[in-house]
Amino acid sequence: MVTDEPAPGGLDHEAFRSVYAAHYPPLVRLAYLTTGSLAAAEDVAQEAFIEWFRRGDQVREPLPFLRRAVVSRCTSWVRRRRLERRHAAEIPEPVWRPDGDTEAVRAALHKLSPGSARRSSCASTSTCRRRRSPPRWAAGPARSNRCCTGPSPRSRRTSMTHDPHARIGTAVRSIADEVHVATPDPAILLARVARPARASRWRPLLSAAGVLGVLVAAALGPGLLAQPAAPTDGTVLPARLADLSLLTAPVSEAPAGPALLTYVQGGAGPRWLHTTQTVVVGVDGHTYRRLDEAERRGGPAEPGTWQDAPALLAPDGTRVAVGSVGAARDVAVVDLRTGRTRTHPTASTGIVRPLAWSPDGTRLVYTTGDTDTALLDLTTGTSTTLGPAALAAAFAPDGRRVAVQGTPETEVEPQRTVRVIDLTGGEAVELAAPGFGVLVAGPNAWSPDGRWLALADNAGAGKLEGRLTFLPTDPADRTPPPAPVSTAQEIALVGWAGPDRPLITQGGATSHRTIVEAFDLRRLSAVDGSSSTYDLQAAAGLLPGARVAPAGAAERGPWPVWLRLAAAAGVLTAAGLVWLLWSRRRR
Image (cartoon, rainbow, N blue to C red):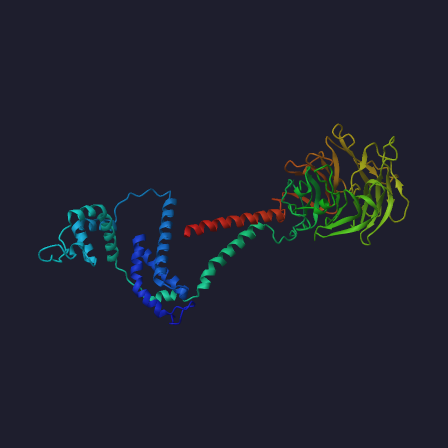
């Protein structure tokens, strides 16, 4: 409903109606001269009146304001039409044919002879050169004031120079004057401006802000609100492991949940570039995260390069123990379910290297530099020294014993003794000393039945075969051990899929790692790409129940912060350019 109340700016409806009734038709004709379209001219004139009404008493002179508004809108309308025609390249150029208005202009020009043009000019002016009073010196009766019937020779020469423009202008004005303009009821326009102008001005800005918000949110994803990976049906050992990616999210920002595998991947490079990563692979087989705590506790291996600290995956895959590259006084334990890190003090200061987890995940064997080997109780946070610094260690399946292999006693006899320490207080048992370069095959070296201890011989890697042998843990046991496993490459034990199913990896430190069955060398999993992959470990408690299957595309979590900021800046820049081009087109 339209009322007679004043507009927000102070302009009442009566003043609007009076100006509207007097000047609407002339303004429509003015717009028609530029656009050539009566419909477009009416729209332009109505928009000008609406803008004037909304501004209210801010406009002191309505008529000049309305004329400027009409001319400005007509100019924008013509510019848009030109752009539309310019960009319509797929439409063939139409053959020009004169329309009705052109024919009307031509007919009007032909009808207007020089004499009639002059007569119309004389009729529309207040004085005429031939109507002037005779000069004082002129004799005879006064000349008639009747207008001349034809131009003088001088005026004829003048009309030949200037009359074409005057005749065209007169014809165009006559066409515009002949246009029938129906003045709509002003109540229609007043109904269009019944809503406050503030809402109409802010609506485009709010819409643009909403669009920019959506674009920025899309650019900052995926995973702006990253959550731990959803549990899957069982544990999956992926048939193909993903290659190195600089977009892998850190564990502290996007926890991966329990992990089945962990390994080091990449090559030399600075820390900030993340070209060397300690990667954890979730139990679903396709969730990958970067263990940033290993990067934080790492150190420079060579000038300009960074080496991650050594890490060790717990048997249940929920935690990772992280040592240090430089001297440290604690060992870190990262919870893969929450991304939180907890540190525990060590028995001494030095380079910390975790060696073995107990099967229940409550104790950890580690070494501190070249000083000693200690057992950390994670429930109390206390450490107990087990002896000199060791090279390798492995817990028995019952968690009551731990096999520790020390450093060579002399340079002449570089054989490393393997001792089985009874953690319940019994006497330690020394096993037969392995040969030169033979080491306990990692934290999962003890067989699930507790009868064998796997040893890896890579002393001649690159020249001789790598060998995996099995040493009886009970000296009194006379059962023949399983047959040795030999490969042409470096060999390492991943874990046991069953009592008689050891899984190994083969490859060099600068080549890919492939997980295979130890006895028949049947391939189970391999790494894609060309990045170096080494120190591959598995969660010993999850490996027996894992199934080999394709895991699909890697899920690496949210993008790094620097990439999110770069993407947001790119989106905002693109949006600003689009807005600038759009605003220029509207001018």
